[in-house]
Amino acid sequence: MPPLNVPLMLEPILGNYNAHIQNFIHFLSTRVDCVLIYDGPLDIHQHIRERITYALSVQHRPTKKILRNVYPIMLGSQIDLAIRHQQVCTFETDIPTVSNASFQEVDIGRGFFIICGFLRHLPYFFTNDSTHTHMVQKKMVRVFTYDALDRGKELSYYVADCPPKNGEI
Image (cartoon, rainbow, N blue to C red):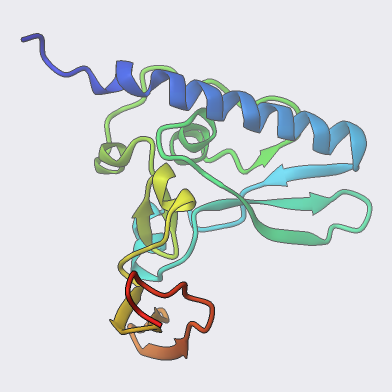
């Protein structure tokens, strides 16, 4: 059996992400007079420690107002490498190409996003996050949220529109 080539497997996903973000940069600069910026910490570990999202923001050129955390950054993407290896933080037209980037421990998470300090992959955005929502009894759901200091808050609610199970009236 041939060895697993993870970079080759991720090539279509990263290529698609890179193309979409390039289109977004073009749209911002030509249609709405905005620029895509990164205004977060350059140390990826800080995102995890402080449970913040690794994302790009949009800045309106004339007013300099910033809409934060608009576009999550995929680890291993062209824009991620430009931020981490070249400290580029403003993307007006093109994303600089980083060639022969040295391997960092963050590169293990290639293809993932850092959302609120946690590594998330694409299926996370399309399904329920089972680590935060728990069914505790029939028709009752508990949701737990945590802040940066790991203090938890619980929200319990009842689901009124659950269809009855077979034989249940």
